[in-house]
Length: 389
Ligand SMILES: *Cc1c(COP(=O)(O)O)cnc(C)c1O
Image (cartoon, rainbow, N blue to C red):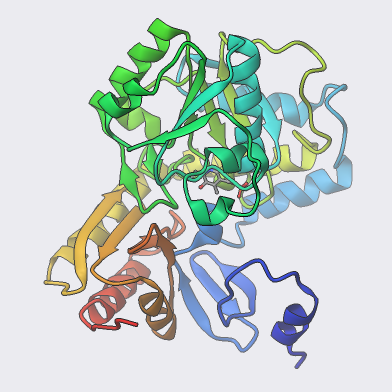
């Protein structure tokens, strides 16, 4: 058998910390490697595979659309694009009435930043510590982690970072020139930090008073992950702009920027070649229909609570705290997460890190309870071992 790992190591620009798995197939919540080993997937492509791997509804939608029409630029109308736009606005918080379609999370953030500047005529943004918004220059400037930014300066000027869930600290940084406040409602990569309603209520009021655009990044928390279609529903917060991507199209690259009536952009000021292509739109329609038909928000809520309860049954010596909202679960460890991630891989479970000391658990929302039991058993076993590096 060809050594795919060696080939990839040879030819791929080495930007990702790699794990020793050549994933070749996925079946719902199982990932299978080239040696036939099976793993329970609590990574979900970093929160993309909410409807599981190998989803036939999405596969059929892609096949049917690929035969018909894959590409048509934004200057023309398209049936699938129309259908998806209507669907997105229908499921979104009710003040969001328009959408711009793009191809990734970072692109959704870039668009939101541009929109906030042009709508307000102001320049500055307030973001949160531990925030992650993407890797392109604007989104990177909004991202908190120094390690991601070092060496890439000069970044986009005008970004400040304040502690998450602390309104007073945020308010202190507002100036006459604040165009937008950009926040995740549940910080994902930062370690599953959950916002609170009072915080978002106050921010909403502040934004209204000071003509500031409230941008919510639900690239990771969106599409039923947290037990609601969008996590902002938990906090009754109505953003002016909602950024989406990851799970939006069942794994096909896509992003979306949902906008309130406030957001009016002159024609010709923004655009993208691939954004809203009929193939991605068809995949997204099928993925969203699948989520609604199978009540994946309710499933995420029930399964998240189930897994949390299992984990709470016994003392886990290496665990400081577990933060859970739907199937977005952060296990705060007393140690660095990496040895635990590798140990869990030996046990056949794939998980992600988050923040400095967090294990992030993001299974497909369609995961079977039987597999959740196995995840819980493996976590209980591994999180009682001291694996300090
Ligand atoms: C993944 C992520 C992004 C960036 O999305 P890409 O598609 O990787 O560019 C932005 N914001 C959040 C909250 C994310 O989790």
